[in-house]
Length: 270
Image (cartoon, one colour):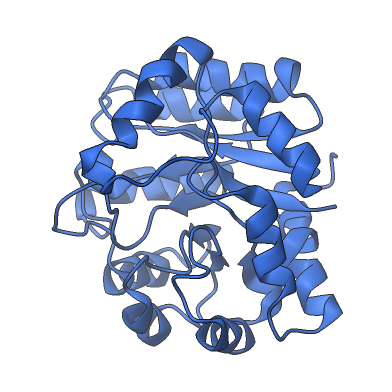
């Protein structure tokens, strides 16, 4: 079972304008591999041999959560049942964030995604601490976009050192640092995050992160805490799987990264 912990898709009518906009000059002309629709993701999974894709959703403005989380539950529980899992979303400035967290749990969503750059907060800000406390109580896994987002200007809102502060303050949480702890911040990630009690996902890292360095990350952090992610549609799932298989790791390490670790994280209900 291959599980891709880090993918994106949108309702068809939103994908039609969101993907071209995201692929524009802000992303330096990077072309997506898919058009952002659920059907396209499912076809990509067939080609890549991916059994489950976890879709990561982002509310970029307060108040967007309800509609996004409703659709997240729909693709998980109806349209892509058994093949699609969803993480919910929450904007930190939403007044009734407690109510929406309860709703995320009630909808059966598998975790929560934060993108501090799009949501305009620094990961270590104290105003987020009540939300982190509630997430720990709910035992919801949390995935952060970490490091640079090539579609957005500096500053980077989730630096490895800042995320380390969160983990030290909330060691009971289940934290996932996207992009191996920080896209284009890998030196800092190796210094501040490798070895801490959190997961790192591989999304959009290879070939940007050298193979030897990726292997060093895996060995220092522990293969059991590495999750396979592609960042589809911005990377091809089949290529991303092949990149993991090409690493100088044991078959057991690759098996864990490609699926077994994520299956344990997501629970035994599949």
